[in-house]
Image (spheres, rainbow, N blue to C red):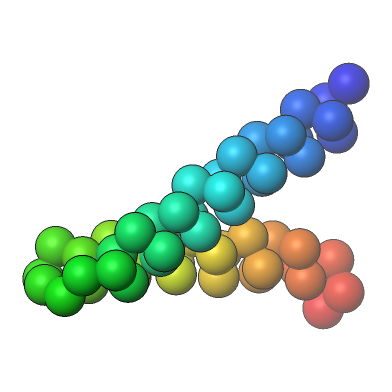
Length: 55
């Protein structure tokens, strides 16, 4: 039960971060750049979490 909930949370975070990058990329400005950076940091965090067991 716990593993499936964790996978669901990671999926929601992935979709949210990807949406931040896509929405921020459509226009130029400081706010959109910040949105893209937050989205990128979230995606990198998820990638780190995935690869942590192989280090």
